Length: 598
Picture 1 (cartoon, rainbow, N blue to C red):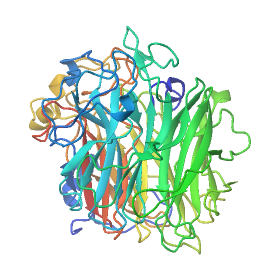
Picture 2: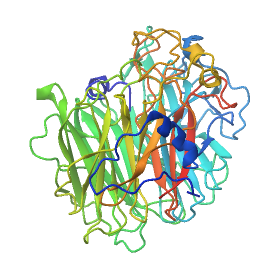
Picture 3: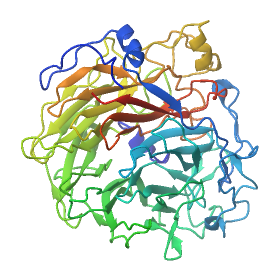
């Protein structure tokens, strides 16, 4: 999410060792699990972890350089020149940087250090082919990043190809990683590019049409795609233009029209009447009122596509003050495309969130408002207690691939803070989104701590996967090997924590990642499983979304979760600052976990 959205961000902002125990009745919670059992569940369930981003040296030439360093506190080290990239990516300057104002772009390529925010997809034509995407930071202090990718051809065991995603380097930032494969094995990344420059105090200035605008030749903000064609094997093999210009879906070049939170999905079911239709959605913050938008095109086998349809606003439920955001389109096997949209009520201090659903049965031409998965939700605070990272997206959405009662089920998981800590709730619809089941609690922690940022995936068998960030385990103890590898000694300044620093043994502070599996009717399968091998400190090298000296930091709005087409493996990708031997700087890296789907 873009940092200028401060108003909205602060509003909510094989399986031999599977856990013993029969599935609970449909709709029941999994029941509390001890911290010791949870900690041991990583090994018990034969989960694997791979650091997908820590092994390569990636660089790009940023449009706007920024050299302020907050280090050595929290492991910050500012912006650094490229020591020699090992990825084979283009180091610039780039075509979209032609025409930049004096002083832009940077004089040379800069080193990518942090990889915040997570998305992961599996090729429907090859279950061993995965592509993840993330924010590729050259300056955590300045929130200066493009989107990058990491790619595996062996089912996630190794990630030999990575680099920044080309085509939109002429904007200060590319943001919000999200991608999708088409039915031919081409991969589409939906990019949000926007311009800003730095004021003297390091804050971000989004003024356009002035002499200080970095790149007046390009629209100030765009939603666009880069396509990695089937068979690509190097970092530079992307299709980034259509008709001789960047592949824009929509452009915005006026204050008061600002896109955000884009998402993409592609219909990959050969039996669907809209096979290989690409659906692109985003929100236009029209003078702070979000207007949900959609456009579509049809993918071709060579990695190109038809023209994007004229963007159209989606219908919104009645009585939706301040508009709706967080569009998450998914396609059912019959070709129906659905999305949720999330509303924050300004009349109640932007509390009491309502999630609604809309759908289209004619390939995105017309849309109808469906039911409401959840109403009157208490969202988390803009910043989680004890730490400085802000909240991410309120909810997640997925569509089942197996009929239940003659319909494809729809699932929504969301954050709930009504108990004074973050919990994850899950609900389902078995009638096409009209009615929704009573929510069930997903996290099974015994202590009252924050569980947040869920992401849903559904296996071909119908098994539902909900993964999320988890703070039930305390930070490692002083003097322990885990504490040293977690870099806790670097965490010495935290104005949002009343305890002693470094945070050895601190509760509701450090972070893990978890998953819970369900039967299609929401009967839980076992308990929460820890999918991160090590606890990490979210304060380390965490990007500052407002300015280098501003309090709010960032670990991402997205959490990757996907099930292989065969349905046998559940993959996740998430942030960690733990040093497994490849991350001595304790930068944010992307960890990919894998475990068998029960």
